[in-house]
Image 1 (tube, rainbow, N blue to C red):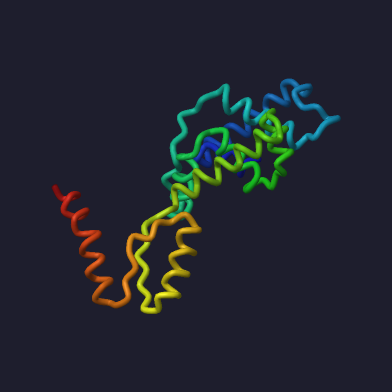
Image 2: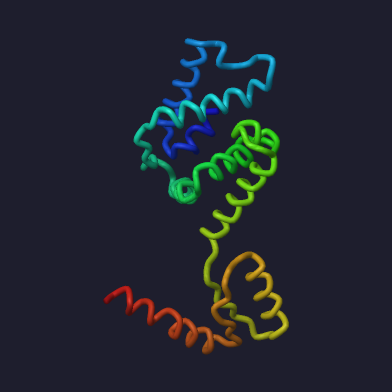
Length: 180
């Protein structure tokens, strides 16, 4: 639960505060957790309830390694419910049915949230690609593969000279625009 809370908030300390508040709410009122049901789901539901009701000024922990900072920025860019669904599924290993129970929604809604999370992440990582390949059939295969992964092929160059010309044509106008 700590791992989830830390990822949800983007901050180790604040995530731990939410977990502590969740556990304290159980100690003060044990009936908040139904021991006859799925305790794991009940714990995460309660954590999300605490998270929604007690806003803490969450900021990304500057002590995170660069790779984790990038991942946190990607998570921060997601819509909240799809982000929660994504974290429950990918980080905590919840099934789609468990995600639905935790978020108190239908199985279809949970799947839609997971699909939206996948699209949101894919949109964040797509990029422009220049293919440099002298064999036309291989270049076409590469282009198809790259586009199937959601990226945009901006040009296909057959030689070093064509590649350099393409970079100048595609990048220099942008670089001049940024300087202005």
